[in-house]
Length: 67
Image (cartoon, rainbow, N blue to C red; front, side, top):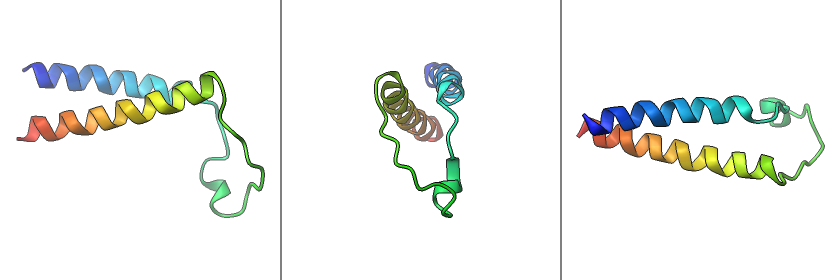
């Protein structure tokens, strides 16, 4: 039961983190739509790393919930 509640909370946090990230080119850079390199700094960098950590935690909780 604890894992399920934790997974729900982590998923809500993950959704908020993704929404808060700055809008960028997305996949257009892969297809040649953008040639500019933009380094992440400050809050944007913190949100980026927090999103990665939260998504890894979400996957770990999903695997733990399936076991």
